Amino acid sequence: MRVKYSLSVMLILATVAVSWAQTKITAEFYGAKLSTVIDVVSKLSNKNIIWDKEAAGKSSTSVYLTIRQPVSVETLFKLALKEYDLTYIKQGTIYKIKAAEEALITIPPEVVKYLGKDVFDSFVSIIKDNISNTAEFKIYKASNAVYIRDAKENVRNVKKVVAEFLKPLQKEAEKLAKIEEEKEKQMKEAALAKAKLESMLLKKEIKVNPEEFKAIEDELIETLSPYGKYSYDPKKQKLTIVEVRNNFSKVSKILAKAQKIDIVTKCYYVRALEPAELL
Image 1 (cartoon, rainbow, N blue to C red):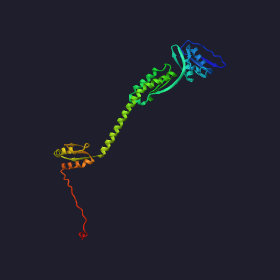
Image 2 (tube, one colour):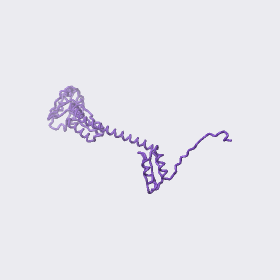
Image 3 (tube, one colour):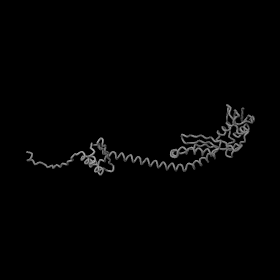
Image 4 (cartoon, rainbow, N blue to C red):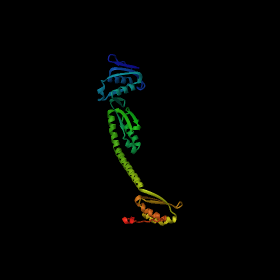
């Protein structure tokens, strides 16, 4: 079926009693009013179409549209409306033309990060529940976003509903983020403290038989600092000591006892010689 309308040519219509999604037509509109295009759709599809008060302001807009490849009447209807920022909602047997609005609604990544992917699924469900069944709807999981195009009031209502839905979730996510941040801070501080301590520690291994080790063990325990530690392998007769630098001299004296090394402190007196003593 071909529909042609211009300012100088009368419109020829043929009504059909089949689904408007099945009826295929080509069409040419040169300067026809948008209201005329909608009348064509209404008559070809046998649908009841009315205009919302705000949308009616565009009913006199001139339309320049050429459809050479056959499309359904429904497609022509949607295309003509979308071209002029309009859409429609279905109310029973009535198709109501309304001003359209589109939006990309996102959920903050930190909400999904700290509260899980199920939150995004709930987010999507809430949007679906608050748009019309004729709305355009696309989900972008990678960016935690949903695109919608619907009647203006529906889109604005969705934004309000989503904002209320996200408020407590954002607070909870922020709380969890702070807890994680504090944990990371503590871990970094602990790592720095450990590195600093390790840089202050000395390690020494000596051969000591079990009897010698038992003889010094109690004294060794008393002498080691809170950061010091020791281990003894009786099979290898190896004593391993790890201690801070400033306390290692005390530990060394105990180890010297175990190895039966005498630590002798010698004092020397130095005086200047008289000239006569040099002769």
